[in-house]
Length: 193
Image (cartoon, rainbow, N blue to C red; front, side, top):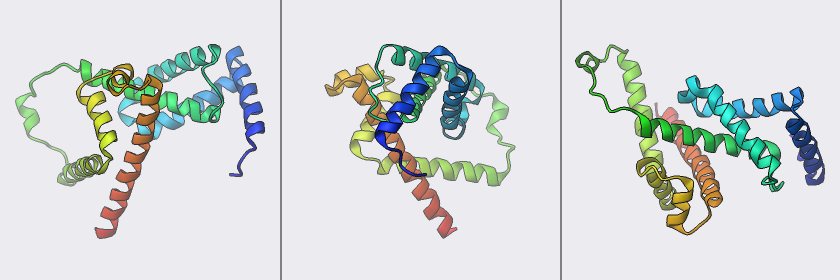
């Protein structure tokens, strides 16, 4: 895809924002498509909550656009993608934090799945752990504060002495790097196997 002149991109995004804020079906459908493009492949565990997550994204987006928080430092599509990622992460964090601690039923200890599926799941878990270990120290620190300590972006920012928005940006970059590491590990595993 050819690069778009930043001036043209900004003008196109201004039209999209105007139409989206007016509730025009074409603009709303386009933004919804961008949201689903992020949720489908990246957050399959949110399948049952996908509609709710998308609505939260729309709420945040509408609020940010109305208050002028979108500063055209990126394309509108990139901005929507970042909001979607952060909303999904918040949803996963809420699910993890609010999950009841229940004892596993005795019969669940016997796994009736295919041994190949068990091995594949175990292998994928190993790759994820390895990717996390190979992440930079600042990224590992972010993951620890967010997922193990259940800190909000604002709380992480206060601890690090940076704004919450900067924390979101760092999480986005760390997540992208983690996915790159995981893909490289999967590729290396495929070549050996």
